[in-house]
Image (cartoon, rainbow, N blue to C red; front, side, top):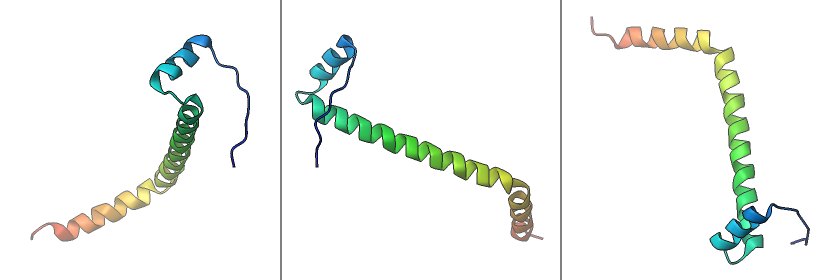
Length: 73
């Protein structure tokens, strides 16, 4: 369901959007969805990095242990 809304944008931005697309509503919808997806991805990456950082020492030790078995005698 679509809901009509009103937003205030700078004139120059509105002109740029008009040049980029004949349907400003569709353009802004796509832009908002893309921006929200990027924000969600960034948050996931930040959380993943924090998890890896919290376990980095143990994971590095496990990786070194595995590498020992790959070296030829």
